[in-house]
Every structure is written in C-alpha cells, then in structure tokens.
Image (cartoon, rainbow, N blue to C red; front, side, top):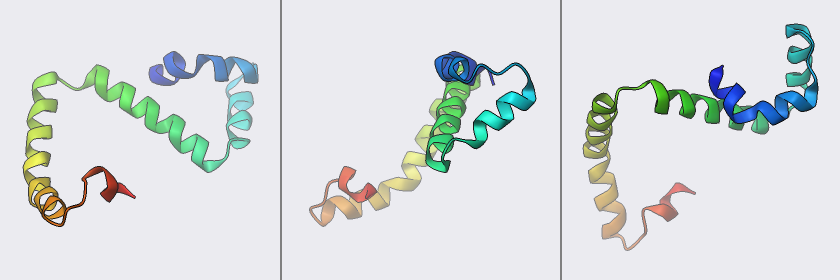
Length: 86
C-alpha cells in the first residue's frame, strides 16, 4: 500500500477520499486495464524495496537459465527476443 501512496498520490488526491468507503467507490470507476496497471506498479515498487538483492539476483539467474533454451530457439529462427512478446 505504501507503493500506491508513493506512486499514485496525485491520483488518490484527485478522488478526495474522506473514508475507506470513498476510496473503494473511487476504485470502481477505474477500468480493469488501468486498475491492473496501478497494481502492477505497486507490486513492482514493493519488490524493489522489500526483496533482498541477493535473492533477487539468484532468482533472476535461475529464471534466465530456464528461459535460455527458448531465447536460443527464437534467435535461431532469426527473430528478435523483443518481437516474441507480442
């Protein structure tokens, strides 16, 4: 929730919530894509602040090892890794 406060304080302020109920009603007007984007930003913020650096690096290396065969396959077909996200 701190991530929402830090990242989205302008948005929160524009709703002028006076209570938790006000805030809940304000959230209901957001479309699903916007809501999901705001949540992703807050989760990413929390991860950057809370996850120990050593654990993050190790998990990243492990995930990269798992993805490497797919990356190699994409490159062997002459495609860019970036274009494979679509």
